[in-house]
Image 1 (cartoon, rainbow, N blue to C red):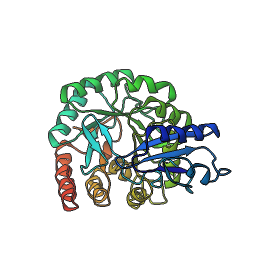
Image 2 (tube, helix red, strand yellow; image 1 turned 60 degrees about the horizontal axis):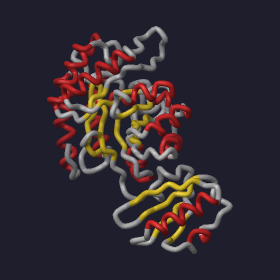
Image 3 (tube, rainbow, N blue to C red; image 1 turned 180 degrees about the vertical axis):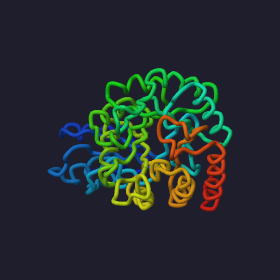
Amino acid sequence: MVIVMRHKATDEEVAQVVGQIESLGFKAHLSSGEERTVIGVIGDERPVEPETFEVLPGVEKALRILKPYKLASRDFHPDDSVVRINGHSLGGQQVIIMAGPCSVESREQLMDAAAAVKAAGAHVLRGGAFKPRTSPYAFQGLGLKGLELLREARDEFRLPIVTEVMSPQEVTLVAQYADVLQVGSRNMQNFALLHAVGEIQKPVLLKRGLMATIEELLMAAEYILSHGNTRVILCERGIRTFETATRNTFDINAIPVLKSLTHLPVIADPSHGTGKWELVAPIARAAVAAGADGVIVEVHADPAHALSDGAQSLTPDNFNKLVSQVRCVAQAIGRTV
């Protein structure tokens, strides 16, 4: 249920509504806009009638949210949410580009990639310090050393960092180095991890699971939002289907569907969505045309010798071309890069 306060409702009236919500055993979640304050009732409010709150001073109306994801729904928050990452606004008019290597392999490799993506126009540097891999024998990342290198690159190139966190125990450590915490597709329904990143109050990039529905993705986001962390970014990165021509099937439909269902910003990962470097730019262009608020792309100076995901990594030259193409598409639909 959401409770919409009247225009210019006083702080005392808002506090009275919150008190009533909590007295009934629910949690209150406030969303304050320029015109009105909206209060979400968190919990199973089905036994409670909207009239319980509509009689309170300052209340304009109370509405049930029928969707299982309450805080992520546009019913609760009609306007687009904007997540700010060190001066960049994700979810507004600007299309944000995140780029960098799949894995941090060495200082030289990371610095070369950071310099290249910065020069091409990337806003955020991506790089994996901890890597979940299908095979236990594959490169698993440099761990703490990788985080330290990411911070060095962040400071040198003035690029905020997004990197993956794989377990609740790692959240505090990774949050000391990263500007955005990534929850990977394999961990989308790691509920202990979702609780942990919800409590840390840093931006969270939540990737859609390999075989997850859109509703399951939004319910995963709900876990994070329920802790009061509103800075959630959704990522469509392709799903597993019967098709074998590409690594995954990039669900372009998911972008406008998500934009209609949720106020949260949505970005696209065409690297994992296709698994083939030559398909990354076309899908990036399509994603922006479909309404994506950003793209996250893998870039490596020497993809043939990358320790992970070389087949889907762009060279710096090809990444530079992608940025130019995405900029043209964004301008065509009234956005900027």
